[in-house]
Image 1 (cartoon, rainbow, N blue to C red):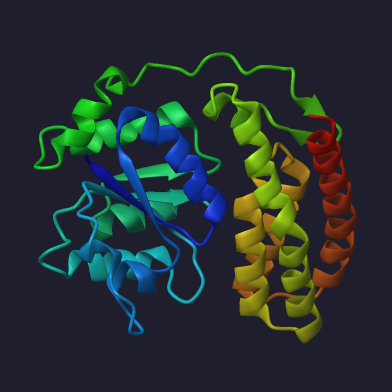
Image 2: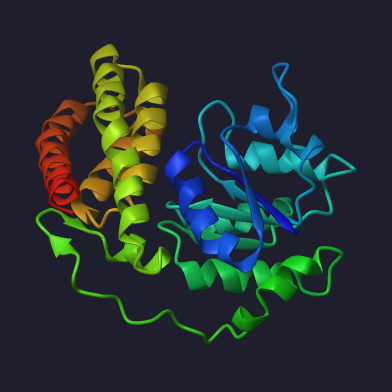
Length: 268
């Protein structure tokens, strides 16, 4: 069975990719950090057991960002040939150019569109030693293919679950499970952002906001997602002058989103 490794600090991102690819008999293995992928800090590298045909690599991660991971991958004789597709919600032109110059072969913006991911993986593996992935996704080699029209039945309050519902092919029980994963973690993630803001630690703000942004992007709450992205950027640039104001806006929005999602779970 062909294998794709996703390197992302977001557990939810890995669940989404699994739901997209596993119905096509593609195994998905999750590495939650560069250390897990490469075997750093005494960890056993995931690639020792899983021989990936492609790697999906988040561009912004704690400890070591995707660009640094990509450099290390391309310096390793055993891993350098593997096609690497970058995942990011910060898909600037410069990010694209930097990643391509370092050896990436593709780029997918978050939240991940199922058809775009399949098309990209089929494209980058076709005609390579890893063509088993392209064969598994042969129906998606037409780049003009579009996903079905989004359903309107799951829009409510501050959330819109149509994105996940489409990925899950209408599997409401699995949708409830994924909402539950988010509910279990989101207030802790907000707590991490709050602590970083109180400590005045810009890099911790960046990391915590990035992790939360990656989670919330799947739940149809663009205002929350964009505010988390702004806070991530402020942390990256070390400009925390009005970060407390952004946090004061974020917290009640997340509380409302949490309540809406909890109400949906309780009623289904």
